[in-house]
Image 1: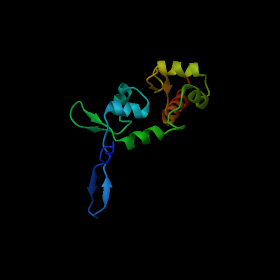
Image 2: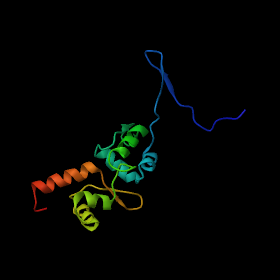
Image 3: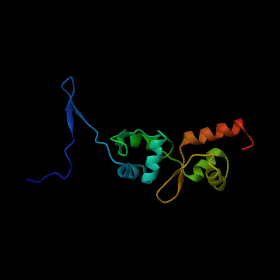
Image 4: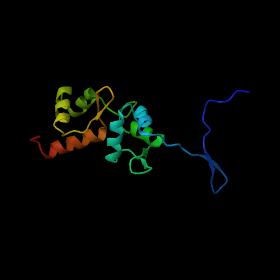
Length: 137
């Protein structure tokens, strides 16, 4: 008889006697792998309350995979994040200008493990609204 290499999935019986699968939270390293960013970015996103997390003590965070996949899908494209060229097209500026705006701190960006910039559509919309209010930027 062969043993399955998969871990058993925790199950709970609800009030109506239905079995429900419990999602096992993952650590920051696994969350970073799911999102394709560094562990530091995961902690920054959690600190900024941009991704949901569970706190298991003063220094221990865990993340539900479903919340991570939802965050990943929240923008355009397969991973939910736009690259510099796509962000430039949305904003109507060059990719170099996008990098400059990020460096000045006017636009929020997520840095991947390889150092590439990724953007959420909501952050681009926020930036465009701020620029419309204050054209001197």
